[in-house]
Length: 135
Image (cartoon, rainbow, N blue to C red; front, side, top):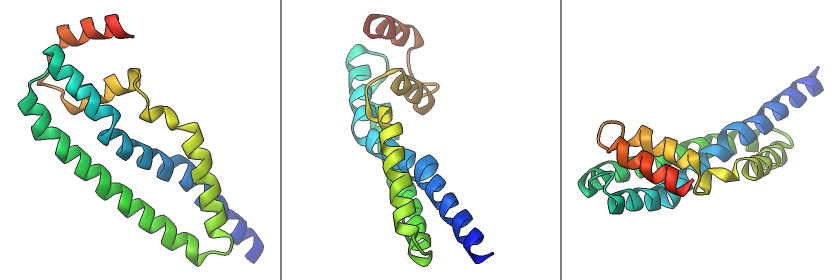
């Protein structure tokens, strides 16, 4: 019975690394790279005012960093308490990084996150024109 509990715990830890930890880290990295660059392009295109970007982007970056630190601290703490925990967490995390790496690429997902970040303060017409031109 102890072995079954260990197996289930390690399976949950692997799934956590794959489905939670990796996407959260990649999303935090994305706020400092892809989303920041996209916001700069949107300012140049006249889709959004620079003041709005300066007001909202740092908050989003801080939230991403804090959430990432909390999730990783909890995951590492849990994995150190479980036999084979670091291996299972690391394997799931590595698999998640490979699966979700598109988060840090300039694509239509970036546009959706931009629209969620700046819902009422962007020019939808200019954004749609840019999307048709670029994507």
